[in-house]
Picture 1 (cartoon, rainbow, N blue to C red):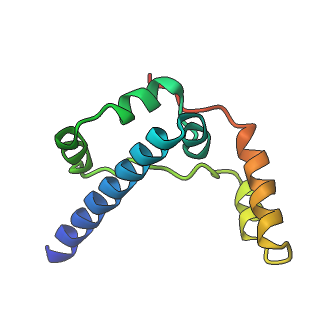
Picture 2 (picture 1 turned 90 degrees about the vertical axis):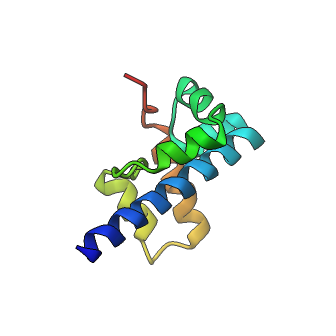
Length: 106
Protein backbone atom coordinates (compact mmCIF):
# COMPACT_ATOMS: atom_id res chain seq x y z
CA UNK A 1 0.00 0.00 0.00
CA UNK A 2 2.90 2.33 0.76
CA UNK A 3 4.19 1.98 -2.78
CA UNK A 4 0.84 3.12 -4.21
CA UNK A 5 0.75 6.06 -1.81
CA UNK A 6 4.32 7.01 -2.70
CA UNK A 7 3.48 6.87 -6.40
CA UNK A 8 0.44 9.10 -5.96
CA UNK A 9 2.52 11.61 -3.98
CA UNK A 10 5.13 11.63 -6.76
CA UNK A 11 2.42 12.20 -9.38
CA UNK A 12 1.12 15.15 -7.37
CA UNK A 13 4.64 16.58 -7.07
CA UNK A 14 5.20 16.24 -10.82
CA UNK A 15 1.83 17.89 -11.49
CA UNK A 16 2.59 20.82 -9.19
CA UNK A 17 6.06 21.30 -10.67
CA UNK A 18 4.64 21.15 -14.19
CA UNK A 19 1.85 23.63 -13.47
CA UNK A 20 4.17 26.09 -11.74
CA UNK A 21 6.68 25.87 -14.59
CA UNK A 22 3.89 26.33 -17.15
CA UNK A 23 2.61 29.41 -15.35
CA UNK A 24 6.10 30.87 -15.11
CA UNK A 25 6.84 30.27 -18.81
CA UNK A 26 3.51 31.76 -19.86
CA UNK A 27 3.78 34.81 -17.63
CA UNK A 28 7.34 35.59 -18.74
CA UNK A 29 6.82 35.08 -22.49
CA UNK A 30 3.41 33.76 -23.48
CA UNK A 31 4.15 32.91 -27.16
CA UNK A 32 7.40 31.13 -26.27
CA UNK A 33 5.72 29.32 -23.37
CA UNK A 34 2.92 28.16 -25.66
CA UNK A 35 5.47 26.90 -28.18
CA UNK A 36 7.61 25.10 -25.61
CA UNK A 37 4.60 23.46 -24.02
CA UNK A 38 2.72 22.79 -27.25
CA UNK A 39 -0.52 24.30 -26.03
CA UNK A 40 -3.18 26.55 -27.50
CA UNK A 41 -3.71 30.16 -26.50
CA UNK A 42 -7.00 29.20 -24.86
CA UNK A 43 -5.28 26.63 -22.62
CA UNK A 44 -2.42 29.07 -21.94
CA UNK A 45 -4.93 31.65 -20.71
CA UNK A 46 -6.56 29.13 -18.37
CA UNK A 47 -3.21 27.98 -16.94
CA UNK A 48 -1.76 31.43 -16.47
CA UNK A 49 -4.90 32.72 -14.72
CA UNK A 50 -5.17 29.94 -12.12
CA UNK A 51 -4.87 31.11 -8.53
CA UNK A 52 -2.38 29.36 -6.25
CA UNK A 53 -5.24 27.50 -4.56
CA UNK A 54 -6.61 26.35 -7.93
CA UNK A 55 -3.14 25.27 -9.04
CA UNK A 56 -2.59 23.21 -5.90
CA UNK A 57 -6.05 21.65 -6.20
CA UNK A 58 -5.46 20.74 -9.84
CA UNK A 59 -2.03 19.31 -9.02
CA UNK A 60 -3.60 17.02 -6.42
CA UNK A 61 -5.12 14.90 -9.17
CA UNK A 62 -4.09 11.26 -9.26
CA UNK A 63 -3.57 11.58 -13.03
CA UNK A 64 -0.38 12.91 -14.61
CA UNK A 65 -1.31 16.26 -16.16
CA UNK A 66 1.61 16.62 -18.56
CA UNK A 67 2.44 14.41 -21.53
CA UNK A 68 5.37 13.78 -23.81
CA UNK A 69 5.21 15.94 -26.93
CA UNK A 70 7.59 13.69 -28.81
CA UNK A 71 5.28 10.72 -29.10
CA UNK A 72 6.53 9.72 -32.51
CA UNK A 73 9.68 7.82 -33.32
CA UNK A 74 11.35 10.55 -35.38
CA UNK A 75 11.28 13.21 -32.66
CA UNK A 76 12.32 10.85 -29.87
CA UNK A 77 15.15 9.47 -31.99
CA UNK A 78 16.31 13.00 -32.80
CA UNK A 79 16.50 13.90 -29.11
CA UNK A 80 18.28 10.69 -28.18
CA UNK A 81 20.74 10.64 -31.11
CA UNK A 82 24.19 10.43 -29.54
CA UNK A 83 25.90 11.08 -32.88
CA UNK A 84 24.61 14.65 -33.18
CA UNK A 85 25.86 17.55 -31.08
CA UNK A 86 23.29 18.52 -28.44
CA UNK A 87 22.48 21.89 -30.04
CA UNK A 88 21.82 20.27 -33.42
CA UNK A 89 19.63 17.56 -31.88
CA UNK A 90 17.62 20.15 -29.94
CA UNK A 91 17.18 22.35 -33.01
CA UNK A 92 16.09 19.39 -35.11
CA UNK A 93 13.56 18.22 -32.53
CA UNK A 94 12.23 21.80 -32.10
CA UNK A 95 11.63 22.00 -35.86
CA UNK A 96 9.81 18.66 -35.83
CA UNK A 97 7.68 19.62 -32.80
CA UNK A 98 6.81 23.00 -34.34
CA UNK A 99 5.09 21.12 -37.13
CA UNK A 100 2.76 19.36 -34.71
CA UNK A 101 -0.64 20.82 -33.89
CA UNK A 102 -1.09 22.33 -30.44
CA UNK A 103 -3.41 20.70 -27.94
CA UNK A 104 -6.94 22.04 -27.95
CA UNK A 105 -9.41 22.22 -25.08
CA UNK A 106 -12.17 19.97 -26.15
